[in-house]
Structures are given as structure tokens and as C-alpha cells.
Length: 318
Image: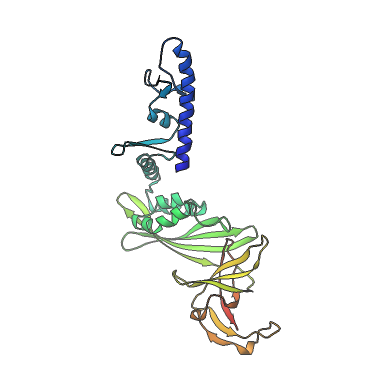
């Protein structure tokens, strides 16, 4: 913000310098008033800008606002604050009016706008059609992602609203299937169960649950080291670090586990071979940072960094 203020101050000084040069020609005619123009438009009233003892005086607000910035006066400290950001009140009003224009008038309107927001990665559109409670839950996520959701790859190729039913409280339940794709083709499907509820005269998305469906895929094993363990979400997961990828960075992937994921301890011989007879039962709780593991990934990997996937079998190597 400080950098933006310096830019504005420089613009003001340049304008005043330009005004002083105009004044110089005016002095010859016995006048100490100057005129200030921005984009060919005169921005101060006649007589409001003038020169005293070689210094040019002009209204700060007129100049700053003509440049598209905002200015605030703090009376107690007698401080003028100039910002390159729109005023909070002005910005809030603009957003409120935009959201009013987007307000869904039917359940179909609400689910359609939300699904389009997901497809286009438009967090602002998704947020505009959410209920107050859902907004509160997701606000920090939208802000941290700069209002651009999901990842650029895989992307949502298309979506289909496959089911609609009505709940006892008047809410409408939808099932939406988002088809994912990457440059290599099919990347699976996200199935979202969405509850749309009426609030006064508008309909808003009130609840969202999601499940990922893997496409047909040849399972493969991946070797690596456990770098991080996370049990804060709905499903436990761990961060696996593998060998370097094409840009020299290590391969990183978050692997989620389910109640069907099998964990085993396995012994490795001196020549690097795993002895199947050495397998003993283990669990997610036996995972530790720094362990060498071999993981069976049953489906495609979501392209991001770190990548994301699921694990159906985890061998903890000893």
C-alpha cells in the first residue's frame, strides 16, 4: 500500500509542477492563479489552485480522485491518507449491487449459477449464490485463493445436473457431476450433492458435499518418503516425496486414505527386493515422517503441485 501512495504522491507533484509552468505565463499578466488539467479536463475550480512564494497550492482530493484513487482525512491527527484502492464504502456498495443483480430467483437458477462458477473457477460467482452460513465457512478459502478456485489442471470440462428432489423443509436437493480433464484426457469426475434453500425471496446454495470418482486407470506403485502427515480433514492423508521431475523439483503428492486402504510393514533385502513373506499388518497410525514407503495408487493423479491422489495399499519399508 505504501508503494501505491508514493506513486500517487509523485503524480500529484508532477501535476503541481505542470501547474507551476502554466502559472509562470500567468505571472507575466499579474495573476498568481493556475489551472490543472487531467486527461484534458480541468479538475479544480478557478481560483482554487494558486502560487505563493514559489509554491503551488491545490486541493489534494480533486487531484487524487481525478486520477482514480481515494483520499481520506483524519481530523484528530490532521493526516491526509491517499490510497490506490477504492474506498471501502464504495467497493462494498459496488459488490453488493453486483450480488443483487446475480441473486437467484429459483432453485434452478441457483444451482445453475453455482455450477457455472465451479466450471469457470469463479469464486466470486460461487460466493454470490451461497447462503450466509456457507459464506462464513468458505470466505477464508476464497480470499486465500484470490477468488480463483480449484486448479488449472485438471479443469472442469463439463458438468451435468443429474438429479433433483425436494426435502421436507422445502429445500431442493441436486446432484451435479463435474467431468474433469487434463491434456492427456479423462481425469475423473467430481460428484457434488448440493442443497438449495429459500431465503426470503431468493434461493441460495446451503450445503455442498463432494466425492471424487476415478476414471478407468491402470494402478501403479510409487516409491517415496513420507514428508508430512495430516489428519485434520475428512480423510487422513500424507505427503509423499518421490524423485525429481522434469523441472528438477521433487515429485510431491498428497495421498488420501480410506477405511479400505491396506497398510503393511515389509522388509527389503540388500538388493532392494521386497519379501512378500515378510508382510505384517500395519495402520495409518504407524506412518512416521521420514519413512520409506511404496504406495499403490488405484486412480489418476490430479495435476497440481503437490499433486493429489488416493492410496489403496501402503507398504512401510523396513
